[in-house]
Every structure is written in C-alpha cells, then in structure tokens.
Length: 171
Image: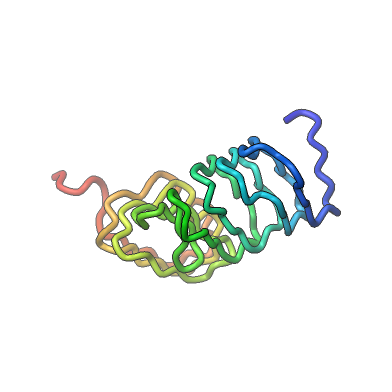
C-alpha cells in the first residue's frame, strides 16, 4: 500500500489486461473514480479494492466468487448493485448485494433511503447498512443473525424493528 498515488481527478479506468484477482487496496482512495472497465474476468476482488471511490453503479461479473472485506467501504455514491445471473456466489435484490441464495445481505448502497429484504434472508452481515440513508428498517422474522456493526454509521436511522434481541431460545 505504500506509495499509493490516488488522483482525485481520475474518473475512469480501463483495464486492458490483468489476472483474475484485483489486489487489496487496488483503487483505494481514488475519490474521483466513477467508472471502471475491463474487470469482466475477475475471480476475486480484494479487500478495500474500491474503498472511497465515486462508483455509482456496481456490476459484479459472473466470474467473481469472492469479494474481500470492505471492498466498497466508504463508497458514498453507489446507488445499486447488479450481479450477473450466472454468478454462483452473489446476487442482487432491491439494488443490494446478497449471497447467491439470498440468505445473507452483504451490502446496502449508502444512497438508499429504504430497503426491501429478500424473502428468506437469514443473516445481515457486518457493515451491511454502513452509512446508508435509511430512516426505518423492519428486519424480517426470517433473520436469525445480525452481525456486529451491521448498522454502524447509519446516522439517519430513526426506527429499527428486529425479530429478536440476543440469541433466540435463551432465557
């Protein structure tokens, strides 16, 4: 990471040739970067790879099977996630990023003001709602796990309804 040069004036990156792994911190802090081309063959997106960029639309290619921790951390402009239908690891629902089977909600775009959960969602991942603009969230009864920090930094949240407090079944 040392020596990372991140010009805020750079808005578009076109990759002509690369391996199948986007390294950790690849575009970290490229605050003007709103468009990236040439990542259609990626298998893995590294940790913090796009953190603090200006991406608006994120399209996860069919080939991606791993998105590293906080890959989109601090991306305040993301409006929605889309995922290629052939992707075996991830899916999108209501513009949010989920596991393929829709059982885990990974990321809610920071610009979203309202969220509709996928049917059958069981887990809300750590940081899923990080800095989103939601004001009210009703977590469905199918959810059995809300990971630590799932609602961190949600400054506009006024109402949160959850199906449980603590571990279900404990007295």
